[in-house]
Length: 269
Image 1: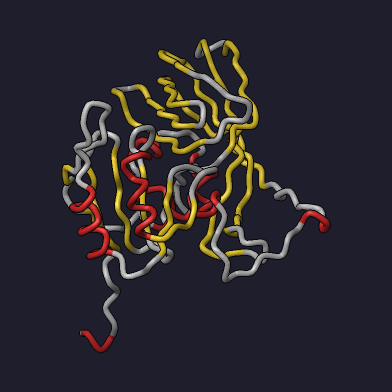
Image 2: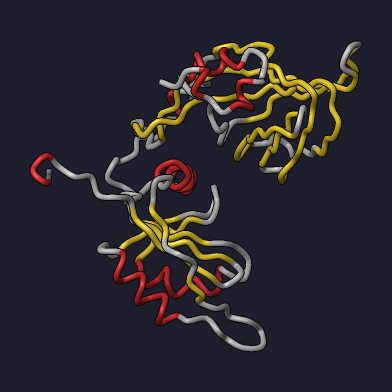
């Protein structure tokens, strides 16, 4: 488990950061956390202040009977920014955090907040964890629980979450230019992409990962046929069902591929 002294120096500057470290055992990325409340106020000593109530938890690799990844360590974290020097915030109906990054800007602390309401920024003199309150996750009513065959494909949400959590240690290739299908001309190198894909993937089916609501399982060849069309509006990721191999496609017309390092066994030593 990570201790306070092992954390990045900017985390050490967050007052009461040990409350978060002790609860999770590390400083989390806050991916998929929600923002439950935002309070703006004028502090008598530090001037402008904002407090975020972040609804956080830890997502494990364990799958429940309902086909969802098990979440533990649920809590509400009250994070206060004092002496705000710069702030750009915007919220949708229920902001979901994609990542919460802290950096030192001289004597100030900069917080970059990527969320479903776009990327936002807070620069403040002081950041504090006011309190961390363990919470009980909501429980679905029994009549709403649908029994899911564990052998069936995951739904869109879990495919997307899995791709975020389980591809972190993939070793990626350099960027490869594959072109785009423009209105003026189709420069997309479909045969080149297919050659890389068939050399990488052993399976006939792959996950097509786009977003939380539109990721799905597809035959590899069918997915390859759709890549050039999808790239007109979004980045695309293909990965195998074990989340050990993947290809990433960017709207600028480049791709890369990679896989997780193979674990060596005792007989290989």
